[in-house]
Image 1: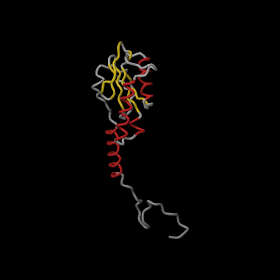
Image 2: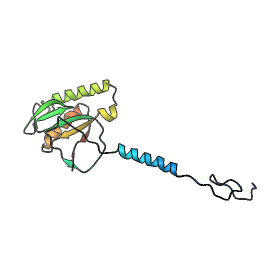
Image 3: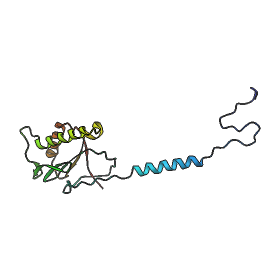
Image 4: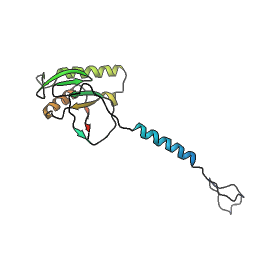
Length: 167
């Protein structure tokens, strides 16, 4: 090929051929459709069944995000749970058994124990251990939710995700 002629591209046909080179898209489309299928299947709706929070009425929401597993703290109108374990009672929607600084000592002890157990199992600290999945009855007053959240923070859990029911 002489320098005076135009350059051949990557998909140019061999010299002397009349047809331009073509790319077969069938295999590419098969691969892309498989990738899209698996993405759609993996991002399906996720639900969480909680037996300890059976009497909890969740607030409603239209937002949908994926759920990362964390330490579940459920606060109903009568009981307080950490991971299915009852740790406290409520009377009229107010916590019973707060200490002088208005923290719940049994909740704090239980959360510290759960955290130590997870760290002993070498579970990831950043994503799973430091997040509380907060399941609170929508009829609770803010002061009760505030006390539970501050006790969780005192135990080392400063990030929260709130459970809601789908509209």
